[in-house]
Length: 176
Image 1 (cartoon, rainbow, N blue to C red):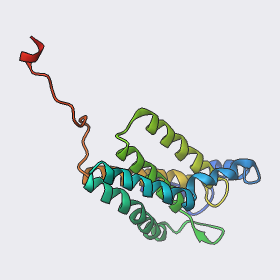
Image 2 (image 1 turned 90 degrees about the vertical axis):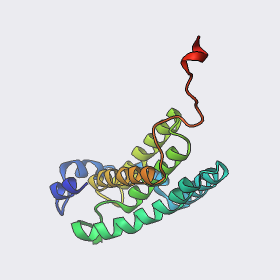
Image 3 (image 1 turned 90 degrees about the horizontal axis):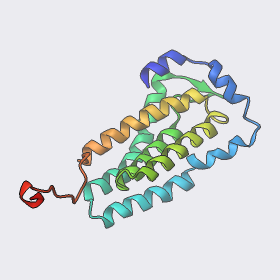
């Protein structure tokens, strides 16, 4: 994220210009995926599911990391100083929060393949929505990088591992 931010500098890139040509297309409807009125209830449901599963640490992480990501991105924006329309743009706060919320959904759902596919598709669509309206597309790429890093920290703090829960190993005696 830092390297991308330094590489894109203060203005638009060729990739950004290409996406900005779509600003008057129906692609602006893709802002749905980054809308706080969509992400808020999704995050609430995710935390409730984690509580229901009695995964207390994960419930706390799921409830607190997206708002913390928003605060963090506001601080980071000041470091890069990249603006679009007179407003700090890099990295995109809406996209960062979307990535973190969807990451929490994946963590709580146990990283089921279908959940990962839906989350990736929603992230990409939300990035396009932001990239054709309020942000340069590269702002959304920086936000994706920041958001995935935050989700990795969240998984570590929640003490998640790659082992399947509730699976016992079969001993050699049981195989015989």
